[in-house]
Image (cartoon, rainbow, N blue to C red; front, side):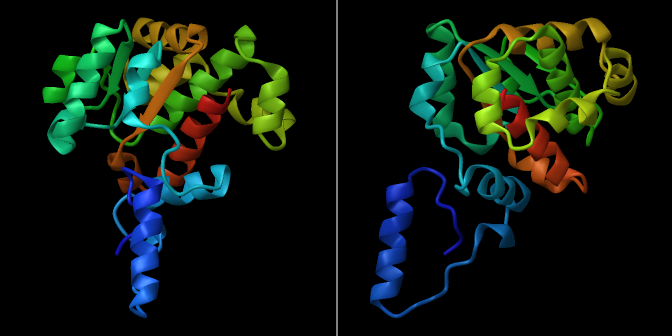
Length: 212
């Protein structure tokens, strides 16, 4: 078995219990396969190796960001939750260099250069900090060494992000404004983020953005 079983923590516990009952130890940790970067960073930063959000929460969000998550092609059964979210008024943003069938379900798509997602996320953190669009007490509780976050993102100005991602500055700013104003956001980490050499810092940056 390869952990985690993404759909349900209870399912993972049940399978582990079955393996132990028959004397098997053949459960691969999440860092060994598939979405290793995302899984390991979630474990290091949140204490769980899978997402803490369930698909039935999508319609309850104001904004859903499918970050490298080609839901329609890779998780077809979950597409119905995108439909439910749209019907509930949720704003859906899709970040992927390619046009896919998932693009049809989204209000907005950003198509950055492959491998530059982390820069886009770091720029968003800088924007949120500059605008003061966060709960400082909550942020300090959730982000260890919060004081050192701003110096890490200082150089990721709108111009720098645009030059690196090759996105239109107006589109970047619109995305940043949407994220900073949304009080209920879900960011779906796609497996493609784990397949870049800078995947660790990319996923870390997106988790920090969500923490803000």
